[in-house]
Image (spheres, rainbow, N blue to C red):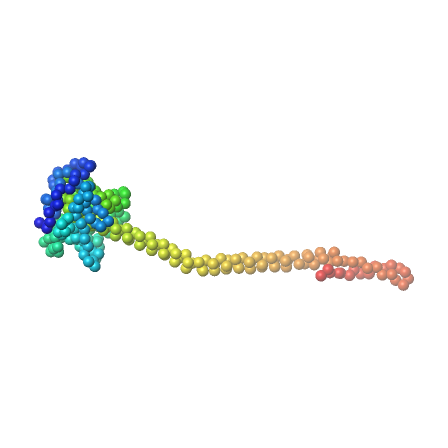
Length: 279
């Protein structure tokens, strides 16, 4: 039995949900309610009901980002959660109280798939040695919202909305649901962090490519312009060379002048043409 007692029943939720066929007890029967329960998680990771009554609080171990402790309102540790970062699927292990003994293992949770766009977790109770999970967590269409389902069925036990509110159906251990939410939020935050790093990394890569290719692009443009200029010059020179004989002939004809000399006898005589160039 986990240390700690429920600080009184939470206020019933405004919405109604059909109860499950059999109550789900994981942490303890004191955390069962015969009616739907809504819980809110604030920025300090304190959990309260819709009346603002403190129900749980989540603490981290000093200098450790991989340990979480779910405590009741009085500060008693109900569950300690350990993130096994060196596993392929990023597994979480949840133990009763402060224990880390395998005999006190409550559940393990891991990603359903190694690569996934939406958060999906398989949850196995401590005595489950099989491959079929006891519970599943599936992220919904809206970001940061997900459902907690019973086994591989579509029977919903609870829903998380926007990382801050929980809706739990009747006869479900809401302390267990809260422990799962710690894992869920960590998984979603880790996915967001990876997405942000990927976006930033891609942006930086594009910037590097942009600036690294800039000199190359400039060189290619300059070389292309120079090549076209040379080709154009060669074409013009070739054309001019072809036209030079015609030009010379035309100028020769236009520069032909007749000179008349008067002989001593007074006879006018035509002299041979003298080519006069206007250069």
